[in-house]
Image 1 (cartoon, rainbow, N blue to C red):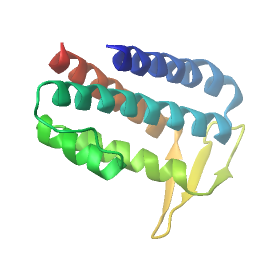
Image 2 (cartoon, rainbow, N blue to C red; image 1 turned 30 degrees about the vertical axis):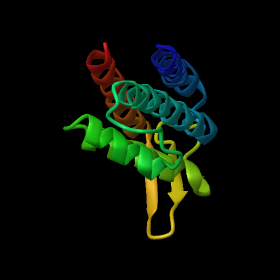
Image 3 (cartoon, rainbow, N blue to C red; image 1 turned 180 degrees about the vertical axis):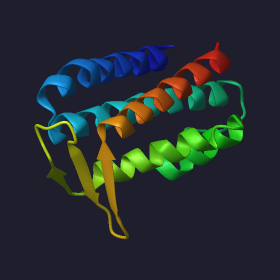
Image 4 (cartoon, rainbow, N blue to C red; image 1 turned 90 degrees about the vertical axis):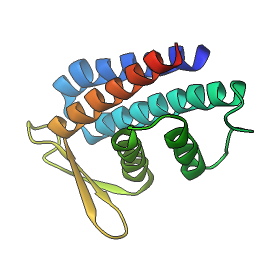
Length: 145
């Protein structure tokens, strides 16, 4: 399955960004890039799940909108709501303007200015997002194969 390979590739790139690039640079641009890689990994995995659902006749077509894709995936596979919420949160963080705090220092923080609230993302948060994304990809991979 090509989508799963792409998803794993994005995880490898995110891993390198976290444990090599971010470790030495500590910039919000690297943090944004990591978030973008995690979103890509989620999207490739979601497409793989939807393709299987279409192939098995459980869904008629692959939806275009993010909300419809998330809804379809949650119908095809139960008990993944937590992961899909993370995906939607990452999409929100990536979408809006951001500011930086303590860049080039240990406590580098990406501050996303969402309409209702500001969302702060630190390096430990990114590590947690990365681990959850890996869990989701491997969980779906197991289910698909």
